[in-house]
Length: 272
Ligand SMILES: [Zn+2]
View 1 (cartoon, rainbow, N blue to C red):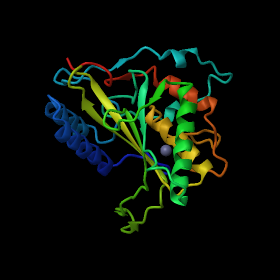
View 2 (view 1 turned 90 degrees about the vertical axis):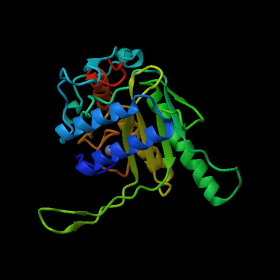
View 3 (view 1 turned 180 degrees about the horizontal axis):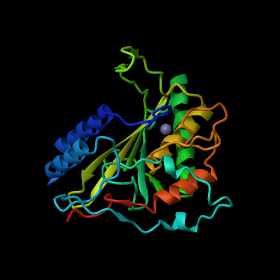
View 4 (view 1 turned 45 degrees about the horizontal axis):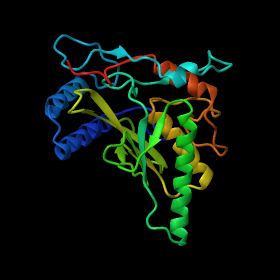
């Protein structure tokens, strides 16, 4: 989910299927094919990305809430009734919730240290991402690891390209605005535990200044931690558009996150 993205369309969904399939091919996860078809079936029946009612023929786990992580349970804001939970979308398997902590994060590392301008820019980017991780770590336990293959969240320093799309109403092509960051998810079945799991990929542009990089990382990590939607107040980190003064993580952001983590999901539960 990137800035400016307000809804999920068909191509977005099929991208996830493709990504998911690639993951299966590379990792040879047992039973993964079965779950691939299940998810594909769910997506076909629910093209609007709405929540799913479990059915008897559905081999996925039942929708069920996890215990609220202690860091979120402990947290109490002053304005506890203020949130934008109504804007949060579910996935074909329910809310995008982590239940195994710490959540592991891989951040792309700068190449061999040298004093080149490009390397210093990379270093600056890396520090900004680390700061964003430290900020969210207050609310959900995060741990930076150096193996991208096993990380729950992978953050890469790369530009985001968007496809030109035909607008069926006007017959004109929409030339997408450049977007600076993007978050995507994919589902997989953990072969050892048989648990329905997810993985997040975040791209953050190398073109941003230090403050904007921190703002983008803060925003995208919010999506990656489960805030799959946007705020309409520009004082929230998950405000839908980039603003000059990048907002810090707000009480409304955390109230929303806390509410999300009390919702049911199929993620984090064993396949029956
Ligand atoms: Zn966003």
